[in-house]
Structure formats: C-alpha cells, structure tokens
Image (cartoon, rainbow, N blue to C red):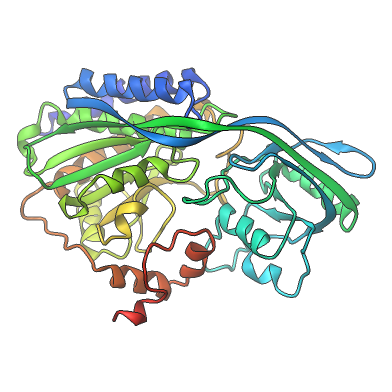
Length: 443
C-alpha cells in the first residue's frame, strides 16, 4: 500500500508539467498562451489516467498591456500598468500614504490626487489588506490615480489586477513601481504635480477551465483546484504553475489507486484567476455547491517546503490536516482563519468547506510573486514531491465515506468574517455576496 509514496517521491510527472507551463511564457487570462497552458494540462491529466479530461470555456473581459508612464517634474520613472486599469492619463499632486491601510486614508484629502501605497502592511496589523482593497479606498476617496509600490528589493515593479467582478475595468489608472522607484518618488516628488498614463487594449475574450476526475461516479465530489493563468510579465512558476503541476502529480498518484476513493475526486484548473477569480466564479455559477464535499485549492504551493493551509474555521479540516501531518511526521502550518482571496472563495462563501493551500515562506507578502522574478529557478522539485505525497494523502482522507464535513449556513460564514474583522475589505472591492449587510440581520 505504501508503494505509491515512493513512486510519488521519485516521480517527475508534476515537475515536467511545471516546466511545460513556464516554457509557454505569457499565460495571461484570455490569451493564446493561457489556452496552451489549459490544453497542456488537459492532456497531462489524460496521460496519467484521469478520465473525462476536457476544457470548459467562458466569456471574459480581455485586457492587454500597452505603454505606461510616470512623468515627474524632473524625470520620467519606470512603471508598469496594473491589469484592468483603464486607458487614461491623469495629472495631480502625489500623495504617499505609506501602507495604504484604511487608517492611512483618514483625515487626508486625496481628491483629484495621485495616491501611492505600499504592497505590504504594518507588522502589527491584524489582517493583510489586499491590493484591490487599497485601490478602492483610493477610488472611494476621490483619487485620480493609483501607484502601487513594491516593498521587495531588486528593482521589481509589481503587477496585479484592479477592477471588480461586475465592473471588470477599474475606475482610475493604476501602475506598479519598484521599491526603489517608489522611494525616489516619495523623497523627491511628494506634494508635486505628477502625471500617470496607461494605455491598454480592452476587448472581448474567452478563457477556460480544465476538468478531469478520478474515483467513483458519485454526485458528491472532493474538488482539487489550482489556476492555470499567470501574469504576462513572468513565467508564473510559483503563481501558479506549481499549483497546476501539483494537481497533475496528485492525479498521477491516485490514478492506479482509485479503489481507495469513496467519493469522486474532481480536478479543476481554473482560468483567469489573476484578473478576479473569473474561472472559479464561472464554475460556481454552473455548479451545485451542495454536491461539493470540500474544495482543496492549491495556489502558491512548492514555494516553501512546509505546507500551510487556511481552513476557514472548519474544525474538521484542521483535523484532517493533523491526521496527515501525524501520519508522515511532517510539519504542516495550519491557519484556522477565513480567507476570501483564492479560487476557493466562490464556494466557501456559500458554506462549502475549503482549504487555501500554499507553501510557507519566511518572507513578507508575495515575495517575488507578481513580478518578473517569479521564475522556475526559485522552486525545488523536492518540495513538489513531498507536498504531493501529503496532499494526495489529504485528498484520499477527505474522500473517505466516514469523513463528514457539514456545510455552513451563509449567515454563519458572514458572522465568521465579521468576527475576524474582514468584512470591510470584502465590501470595498465589491465581493460581499449576501443580500444582508450583517450576519446579525439573519441570526
């Protein structure tokens, strides 16, 4: 029974697929490169023995990067447009708001000005405000433009989408600048008039989700997911070629052992995650959430040797991870908290038990993620193989008939987010999914 462990530890199936994905290059949502990545993943699932490997298309608001610039009084500085920024040119006073957390906007007049914020958060802050949250604080306070400053050394300008689910193109132009450029902007031009311009091609496009499955053909299924797309400025190795490679490796480890599965295991490689969870939102719209026993979303795995997982306050999910950790005497970092960033969110919000799984790194924020430095050389095949063993064991455990994980009511999910102080961030970006404003209204 343990043969699969040794075979997985020696397997190169997942790593070969990771190399295949990064060698495609640009896998931006809606592009031919994203389509090639999806087709390669479909074929990889079929090659390892998963059945019904296919693509499911959906419509998408396409966005293609053009030129962008920051022109200060004495110089022009390097920047890149943030995906789904509108095409626009604005001029205004530069205001550096530091981290750009909600408190930084209090008492500051940013009407008609260019707001610059950092990509990290204060060490003492209880939660991590996402880029889009900071963007919409700027929008709601009347800013004319948005400058997103990296906190990582290395002259690495960060990318990352703006825009809301029902308003895919943002309201004000947005650019990313490196830590070094941002520091220079703040030092030399705070309070000066600066011009930000963005040019982009905005068009109708399509993306696609990749599906495959193993195990018995039950209505209930354990969903194992990743996203295939990446940003156009890098190989997208850690984010999220590694997650998709992990799905292929797990499928490979289970394909000859389907008899250990009491529940269908469905693999989904989502499209267009980086521009607003579009693939998982589409999947939610055509899926009966009641049939999803649990979702295990892999995003950012392999980047660190130790697995970490948000368990969205489900005690049963904590227990399953602890069983796997104990079995292999291998550490797993468990975060028994809610999280609405990631492809698990469209199902978790309706009470479906869900994990957000990544690799723990001793760095602040994304590290090299969303920059040109997200490349294959940062990853280790050892991590992929070790984590594939742990995640295969976890999926097998979750698929057991005697493992029961009750779904939650919408109000219970909302209450949990309220207790963790995360509702404001969800609402400002337009992701609050409920008809009620507070869980107290329905409790």
